[in-house]
Image 1 (cartoon, helix red, strand yellow):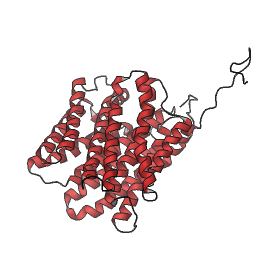
Image 2 (tube, rainbow, N blue to C red):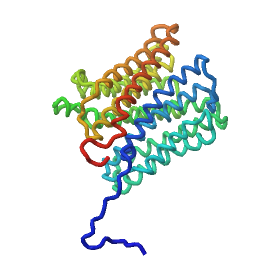
Image 3 (cartoon, helix red, strand yellow):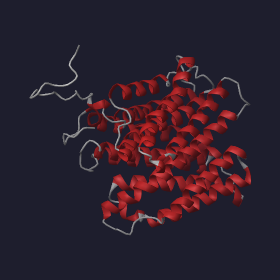
Image 4 (cartoon, one colour):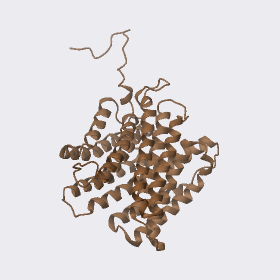
Amino acid sequence: MSRLLPLAGEVVSPAPLPPAFARKGFRPFFLLAAVAACAIVPVWLLVLFGHVKADFHGDAATWHAHEMLFGFAVAVIAGFLLTAVGNWTGQETAVGGKLLALAGLWLVGRLAPVLPRIAMAADLAFLPALAILLARPLIATRNRRNFVMLGVLAALFAANLTMHLDARGLVAAGTGHQAAGIALDVIVLLCLLIGGRVIPMFTRNATGEAAIGSPPALDVVVAGAMLSVTVVDVVHPGGTLAAAAAGVSALATLVRLGYWRSWRTLRQPLLWILHAGIVWIALGLLLRAAPLFGIAIPSSIATHALTVGAIGSLTLGMMARVALGHTGRPLSLPKPMALGFVLVTLAAAVRVGGPLLSPTLYAPALVASGVLWTAAFALYVLTYTPILLRARVDGKPG
């Protein structure tokens, strides 16, 4: 029988730490998300312009939307929440083999063009697996404030399931497209919730201005307004009601942003990129509201203000900041990433502005925006891979 207790005076060696790459959720998932961002857009452009033919388990446009939402964006969300919930609760979510297995599940979910059935099963299993890993510490510590994160993951799972059912022809035609729009709404809602917690705090700490911050009631209004946009897109998408809900949400977002004194962040890239992301949310919602004023704007333009602009800026900014802070490094942005922030902002401006200026600029804007987007996230991969693969510089776990 093996000994369960050490002998008196015996020195017990601590359990070996997992590889640095598997010590916190942000490490594998931020790197995977950045690599996905570099791969998905070029592949999409090659397919769109007829240079590559592939079976995407559905049409290529739906694959592109699905992978940007449930491949790229969900990977960032997973990395952030696995790390944040550990901080909020004081309990680990997933480390070591468990974390790597979850990352492997996400990777298999990206293989739809090669193994459609297996990829679909893995992709559908990923969000429930993530929710279980997050629910355990949240429930154990009665962290009710953050139960909303589980609701977000449940809504994303429902949208993901609907897109897969649509790809197989098991629901009414067009349902998958609506589900993608709802998933985008849910991700924007999450950005507004998390942004409302951390962006004013980051700005306040960096500028020393204690007055920076929005009234709690206004935070509730912003979240409620975006939730109403999501609900309307579920029950009555398109039309006047949807445009009005988007307009109200945009105005609430802009009012709150005014309390955050964004002009004080212009010399600090780690801050201005986050504020820029919130501006893109407001702009995307205003573009959705344009029909209220008799302005006809293609819905894809508003969508890409929210995706390339808002999600692109906020994810790149948060991945850059979190990776520094949680590896024990000072919040001093590596110079290449300052350029990356500029490039992702230009990618959004070109993607939205080109088609607005002239329909003839649609194709050139698509290509230029895709190149700028890919370059921005490639800079993250090149700059942050060593940071994500190495242990904390201060010797602490994580």
